[in-house]
Amino acid sequence: MLLYKQKKTQPAKGNRLLITITVLGSAGPLRFLVNEEDLVAAVIDTALKSYAREGRLPVLGSNLNDFLLYVPYAGSEALSPWETIGSQGTRNFMLCKKPQTEKMAVDEKPNTTIARKGNGSWKAWINKSFSLKISSH
Image (tube, rainbow, N blue to C red):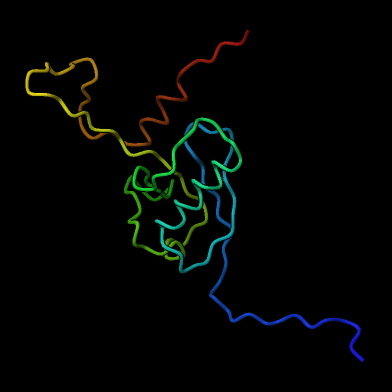
C-alpha cells in the first residue's frame, strides 16, 4: 500500500537560473527563474510581464522590441535578442528602453536643444540621473 503519491519526474530542461534585472527608474530589481537556454528576447518579455503584473511605476509598455538588456559590468554593448541568457556567465542584468529617434517633417526645423553629441550610453545616463538632487517636502 502506497502512503505517498509518487511525483512524476519531468525531463530535465537544462539548468535554471535565478536572475536579477534592474529596470532604470524603478524602485527595485525584478527576480525570477529562467532556463539557461532561454533567449534574451524571451527574458525581456518575461521581465516586462512581471513588471506590469506587479504594478510597478513608471509604466513601461509591453513591446519587447522597445527594450535592450545589458550586462552592467561587461561594457556598453546590448545583448542580442537571439543569444541565450545562460551564455553570459552572469545573473545580473539591466533593462533599458531603446532611445527614441525623432522623425522630422520636411518643413519642420530641427530642435537644437535636444541634440546630443555622440551616441551616449546608459552609463552616462545613470551618472546624470544620480547627480540630480531630490528635495524632500
